[in-house]
Length: 304
Ligand code: MF3
Ligand code: CO
Ligand code: CO
Image (tube, rainbow, N blue to C red):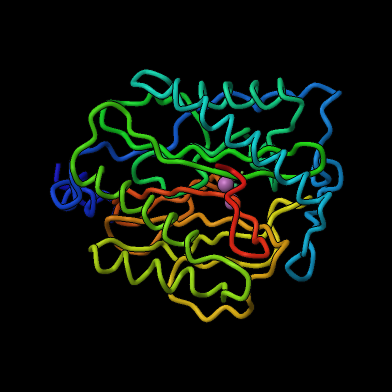
């Protein structure tokens, strides 16, 4: 018996201590999943599927009217699929069921689910439950009453990616969980409100981090927003933590804002699957994401 106590991992030890501090929820680790889903031949794929290379511009792109139209279309589709996902989230539904749903809705709309085979990601959507911060791989775990789950949807439609995510509540979530999700949403709203031409990119993270700290939560600095267009990820990097990233927002730029906020420390660990990012102390993390367009006089939320 003694020896089995000795092999408890540090994550396990943290978990035992934090189960009280962070509230009532199940610590999640990846389990078995199903094979990658198939995309019919008529669906146009992004370039990283055939080339194994991931293209992105060197500098933040200023999009013309046609490119902006393309972004509006793909973002509208992404947010529409996310809106439909909300209806199927309930205890008993597996994250793989969510993958199947998102995959089929995306393909039915004539689009490609961007995560699928992006740098080796095996599924069509990211599902991150409780202590999984980001990039959770959908698997056969059924959602449980009290879980929080981020569903992160990106579609490639008529040449452009649209990217958005939301953290959903499964049944009755404890007060600490509700507060975490609420604050995360406030962070995204607040960040979007300050966007506009001439505004420094760094003001997003500097504003969010101050607010989160005051409320006793933590920004996970490892995860940034990104420029987006015909490419999934490109410049600028959008920090949600304290930073001095250079550059100003200009009309025609499209990028994501996607803060990840935790109840605990700012450290995360990537598991052996190469994707699943968990918090080191098993605290819950929540994330929300929009793709935005900088306009002549402000900002438009493209994934509203
Ligand atoms: N959608 C994520 C983002 O917001 C990226 C997921 S990459 C994947 O940037 F390969 F994990 F899908
Ligand atoms: Co995303
Ligand atoms: Co993104």
